[in-house]
Amino acid sequence: MIGADAIRGHIDLILLALLEPRPSYAYEISKTITDRSGGDYLIKQTTLYTAVKRLQTQGLLDSYDDVSETGKPRTYYKLTPAGHEQLDVKRDEWRSTRDLVDHFAEGQAIP
Amino acid sequence: MIGADAIRGHIDLILLALLEPRPSYAYEISKTITDRSGGDYLIKQTTLYTAVKRLQTQGLLDSYDDVSETGKPRTYYKLTPAGHEQLDVKRDEWRSTRDLVDHFAEGQAIP
DNA sequence: TTCCCGTACTACGGCTGCCGTAGTACGGTG
DNA sequence: CACCGTACTACGGCAGCCGTAGTACGGGAA
Image (cartoon, rainbow over all chains, first blue to last red; front, top):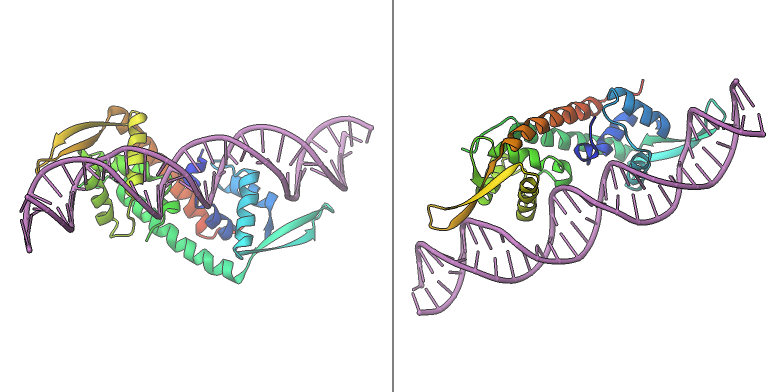
């Protein structure tokens, strides 16, 4: 189980990366995260919708309504061009952060 | 430059790992982080002291005062046995988080 | 001496982001 | 026709990192 504090700050990257290949809607995104993490991370609905709104406000996501197979309207989210750019930026930031924490975590002594 | 939001939640791991080989004091810890990150991450004094206090409250760090080479008293921090245990736990948590974010960030599509 | 600078802290409030809890709404299915 | 799955929204809580600011003290230089 992965806690909120550990993942905090990286949700946006995860969402952008998930939506990179094609648009999706909240419920599917949520299921995908659960499945692909092997159940290790369960994103809360509030967290997901809040994050999506935030990304939309920043102009990184667009949304459009469409009717699902079950006849219900759904809100699909897709990356904007800015979203694609920002995904690259966030990937770089993540790699830097990851390498930094790895470096320290792997027990380098104070010289 | 690595932002606070990116590193958030992993400061404790970094501090515990830095103090694993031997005790140190705030100023040295701060310098070490700056140096070892190549200047990419500059921990704020408030962040550092807050984190240290938190770890002490949790029983993961002990402190003792000693006189430095310059004649000034310093507060040294060292891991408690519980701190050593917790360091292992936090290392595991970090690896899980890292692998999860890596997995998503590397562009796995929604199937 | 006096003054500045490096070192060693503390105080306090702000903001962001994830969470807990809770509620609405609507359609299909048994 | 009652329930359940799906699709959201509302609202407040809290932790953690930051900005800013201040105190204190010793050593070196003018």
